[in-house]
Image 1 (cartoon, one colour):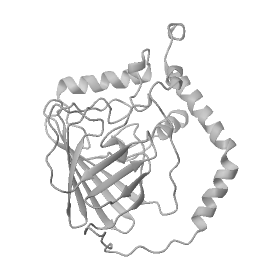
Image 2 (cartoon, rainbow, N blue to C red):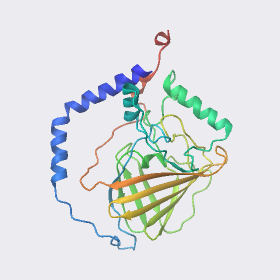
Image 3 (tube, rainbow, N blue to C red):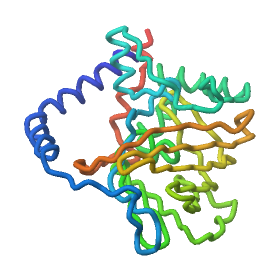
Image 4 (cartoon, rainbow, N blue to C red):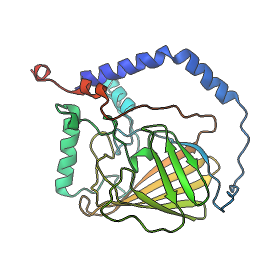
Length: 286
């Protein structure tokens, strides 16, 4: 399986290097453009929301694992160099940085992690790698996203998977419990410069990490997005799911504004055939 990881990453690296000239030029030009300072506290939108529109991205991105917070690229580098990454856990409660799984759920997560190392069936591969929507909260700790604020709502748009969320602010009730959604059903309100989103109705077919962290469709997530200054936001998600965990737990992701960034299409789709290259065949097992 490690050889498969190596081949995939080296292929991607080669493709990126072939583009490095024009892309680097574009990036440098973007970085050299003057950016007008944003006022803080923020101006208000016409409907009274703190105006926090723009592009944002996790300071320490990646969804390979939650403890430590690590991207798949960093995990691959660790494998080939033998130098361990010392990133902190994304989990801030419990203080030990561990997800408080029930015993059966901990065993299931370990099984999913083992299947990731040696996948022999498509369902052994991480859901996002198979181009299924990563869902909430996973989309907040990897790709760039844009915040839009039309009257009465907050909209999040991601470059990955063409994903988006529309969060109403008018106090409407959640949809019926029988409706399950990839992005869940979010209802929001502002507490000063903190957007609080109550999210229910999760389909829960996606995973929280490449190595198989998960919750069930009984999960209830309270998200708090605190805009600390004009360029800094702290995203927190408290996950309550008595089916899977012994207690509610909270993750935190520091986000930064990306004033000179732009969104590129990430045209991953269900049925993407490249995931088949990750499967271990019977011949390779021998």
